[in-house]
Every structure is written in C-alpha cells, then in structure tokens.
Amino acid sequence: MDLRSLQKPLKDRYRSDPEASRIHLKAEGNQTEVPVSCSVDIGRAVYAAEAHTGVGGPGTAACSGDLLLGALAACAQITCQMVATAMGIAVEGIRVVVEGDLDLRGTLGLSKEVPVGFETITMRFDVDAPAATAEQVRALREKTEQYCVVMQTLARPPRLDVEWE
Figure 1 (tube, rainbow, N blue to C red):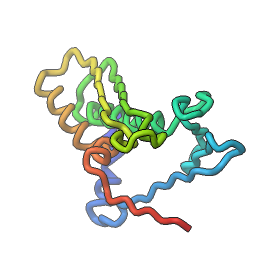
Figure 2 (tube, one colour; figure 1 turned 120 degrees about the horizontal axis):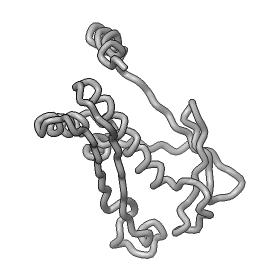
Figure 3 (tube, one colour; figure 1 turned 135 degrees about the horizontal axis):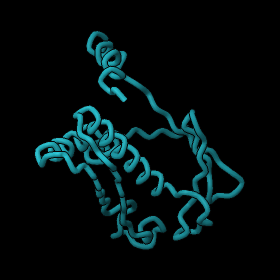
Figure 4 (cartoon, helix red, strand yellow; figure 1 turned 90 degrees about the vertical axis):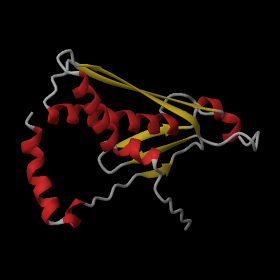
C-alpha cells in the first residue's frame, strides 16, 4: 500500500483548510433488558457490553475496561503499522498487547482509599523487523507513541464535560 499517496490529498487539504481536519466521533450507550449490559453504537457498528464478572456481570461480552484497552491496542497497532509503512520499514509482524490492573473495591464502593478505574496500564509492542536498524526502530517507537491518538489521550487527558438531561 502506498500510504503517502493515500494521505497526500488529505494532508494538502488540511494544510490549505485547517478546519477540514477537525472530526467529531460519537459513541452512544443504550439500555438493554438487564442492568448489567448495554449496547454501544458507534455509528458504523453496534457492540454488546457488560459489567465485568467481578461486579456481577455475566462474562459473555466485553466489559468497558476491555473496550478501553481494546481501543488503545487497536490505535497503537494501526499507528505502528502505518508509521512503519510510511518510514519504509519492512516488518514481518507487529503485535501490541495492552493489559490493565484495577481494584474492584473502588468500583463497588467498598473502600474510599481505592481509586475507581485502572491503576496501571501496560503496553507491549512486539515488532519483527529483522532488516531494521536500531535507529529505525527507535524512530518507529517515537513516532508511534507521538501519533497514537488513544495513547496520547490517556497520557494527557482532555477536559471532560459531563451533562445530565
């Protein structure tokens, strides 16, 4: 795939009209028949989500933590693949594993000292690029981390506005 040719008209347009580069994404959660599950509509697909088994969910669909880690893994995976392609680095394989740890006592309100949410998130990149130099791998890492939207969002959280209707 010639990524540069694919992105050139987009980059040219965004340079000449910066407003054109702005996008709006939306996800909508909707109630299902039981309080431990919901549907999540992202406009192009609808996903089933459930509470984790550790808080009473049935364990037959992804929990919100799975979806968060999955979004990070997908973003990092695609970003690394695109950066490697743009840099002309021949890769035999790229794999990203994302894991997170949290203490459910916070979520269940059992301890005010235990935070609600992930305490740590760990990412592991396995890049098989036998012909790449150490400098190319370093640049691949730097650019992947710089341009991964989900990683940067978690590292530097945006303002979060919450409204109730």
